Image 1 (tube, protein in one colour):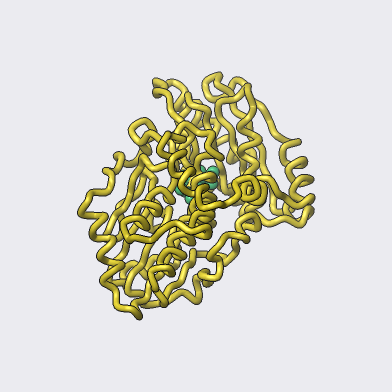
Image 2 (cartoon, protein in one colour):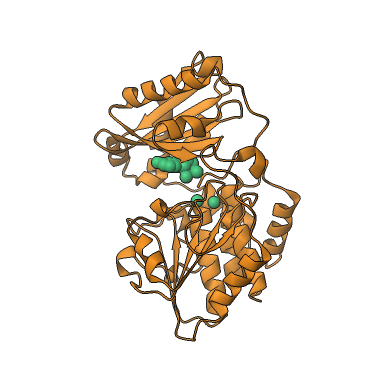
Length: 361
Ligand code: AMP
Ligand code: MN
Ligand code: MN
């Protein structure tokens, strides 16, 4: 993605990693004794980039001979079903079982400490912390920053660090990094899909991994209950052509009862925003996902003209110009009222230049 165009509203764009930072990261890893304890952490509710980057790097560390190695993420120790066949899953431990006193912590796809939940204390306890990330809004927590807002996925930084460590790509590592790259580029559809992204994909594919099989498993396989659930949720979508200063708003919501009725887990709702945002008549799309009574995880997207991160930040959340979110409170109509009001407030502002769909996590 183009960091300059996509800079998060709340933070200046971060610099790219310097040679000194790369060298510090390599040395933090290679100077560890053979029994050094390394803890890998990715963000809460991990997506394909978070898990793929973390597990791909974990497999690389294993190849380097690291023995005391754990991978984890905060919250429920639940891996979304489409990601349950990722190589390296045996590295995962629940957050409650994560090493309390690691020598080295490495974070993946984590823009802020808040995304580490109860695992944030490991940053203070470890001797060193490396942060691999590509969010423009990265708050520069931790000690060694490998943060590149121009990288299409965190896995881009993982591939570079593995190369500097002298770890060759094998099929396990390549599959993890491919899933990460394909996830954050929308399967190589978004504008951030640069020649360098395709060159990286070519290196990964050259290991012999099967893109058709991987994509089918990750993106195109759902239980029948999910298909029926999508029918219910999409069937109640509302189009408001006059909202967002006439650019149009389309929204829908999914309740805990919807999930229970169809026997589905919350992560099943994540792809729904991609169906809702297809709506030609609306620039802004929203999906409200009920988390608890009166609490909603809200996903927002824009095709370009509207800065949804401004709306999300105003409502207590964050994200990128074209992909943002927040936690909404009250009934679904009340949350949409708040969104509509914020959109109306922003509609008088001057629009921004062209931009692509930033990574969503
Ligand atoms: P999502 O709609 O969940 O795919 O998220 C889109 C973008 O919004 C990501 O960059 C998230 O980090 C950000 N985001 C979503 N929910 C929140 C939240 N509650 N607080 C801050 N950022 C959020
Ligand atoms: Mn990412
Ligand atoms: Mn992510």
